[in-house]
Length: 265
Image (cartoon, rainbow, N blue to C red):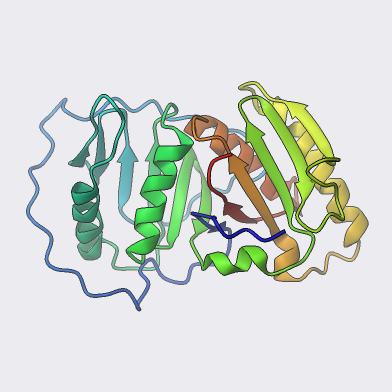
């Protein structure tokens, strides 16, 4: 099974630079007005728990995706209307401002309001990727992040077992593109998911069983560290982060840290 409609690719790998050096040179960013005291958008960040989180060391500029605006280092850049739509021109302004701020290998931090939908998160990450910003860190709590990168989507079709996690509303299904660990018709695991971290524990255990059985020595090729994650567009950011934390690791055991985010179910 080939995945040709993948919009985003997330992989937990070492830092390779926040900005893709092949990206075209951008025009100078227009000036922005600093956010007035008390004017910051409401931002109810999820406090995620799970085995796949890491403690941040050094982070670059911070993007805060709230209910009414997107801020860059505290300054409002993108206003969000009642319909939740993101203005394309303002997203271009955001990436131009990042040109002047992302000057090191430190990942760009992204804070997400818990209620922001998977569709809107995907829109932001896709714009960052197309602008050449591929080294990011999703903030998952006061002292926890999920480091991600946005490499080429062709790697999603590179082979290997390629487990797939599909979450459609409250139904989570684990299967594999290769068919070796379940198929779409006969999946490896089917779960009913609520909003609790414990709901994802059976998924973590199932992935751990696959890793220990197939690669007992711990030696795996990069494609066998890859998992494809697909959520319906209405899933909130809080659920997305819980799912990413659940598939990356179990205790000290690496599971599938190379995470490809596919388009909505």
